[in-house]
Length: 181
Image (cartoon, rainbow, N blue to C red; front, top):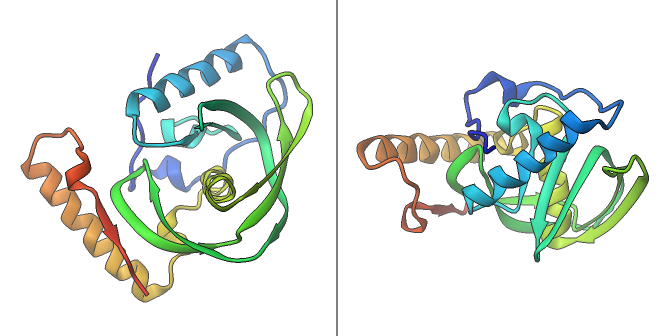
């Protein structure tokens, strides 16, 4: 079953998710549904449970056709800096240059209950950091400097008005890349 993606303004996106204490059949179904939701959306590479209204510390990703899930993730090391256009399924159509650490080491638990670590750089590292933010109720807007946030919010509101005036389907031609200082 696919879920609807919660978008900016939904209070569930600003709440901290609860840790996973037990992996059971219900949780496995939720993970499968999250992958279905991610595939049906077609524009994202990862999805955190709060983005579908589930306040649990889970995120899934499908990067280079490698599907994975992690529970209770945490970044235990990071290094460097990398600026890149970042987007979010919960803030559709908006891409903003964001500065984040270039490399990270993430630790969490896999679907078998085993502790895992993932070392990543650039896009994969950014994805881990972005999804971890969702688990803590943090959105891209929260990571921006005040002037950058003001500009991004104005652009997002414009995109919302444009989407309201057109068909609800999101097309690549409607996506805006916003370079803010």
